[in-house]
Amino acid sequence: MGSVQGLKRSRWQPVPAKDQNWSVTCHTNRPVGPIEAEGLMLQSTILVMAKDRFIAALLGALVELSGRMVAFRSDDETVDSALQRSKAELVMFDCALGIAICSEIAAAARLDGARLLMFSASHTEREAREIASLYGAQCFVLPVKPREFMESVDRVLGTTIPT
Image (tube, rainbow, N blue to C red; front, side):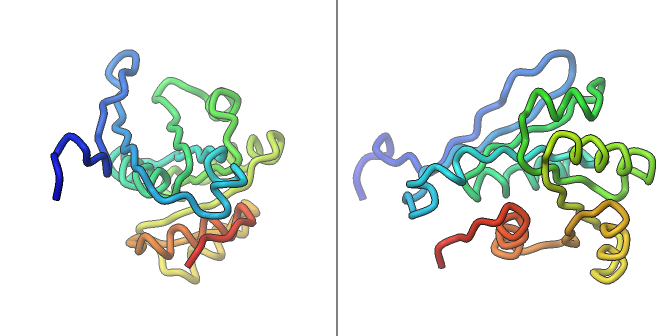
């Protein structure tokens, strides 16, 4: 099989952050498809805002596996600041954050020109669609399969993935 040094499928690196905030990033070496060759996917950044850090980290890993960049809002950061810092094309937010924060996220994303994708771990697909419509967002429910996740993201961003 060759030497272990020659294999670079993925590596996990802690990303230093100020205070007690932390995140983990997974770098993968995927074959380059037609979309990546045009630079459409690799330049996309998705801002993940979740009530639970563990869920945020798992969704962040799925974002990176799809070939996109991921950003997270830190605890002391406003929604506006996180959007401006990340320059995200898509904001993925947890409906469990509550109506006030979700409304703030939706308003800030609209002003910034970012698209919205809501997720829920505690609602049915139908309920989640009804809630997401309040914010002008599309949605998915957890648990989600990696392929379904990528299809949801691609649908919102208007891109396609090779099959």
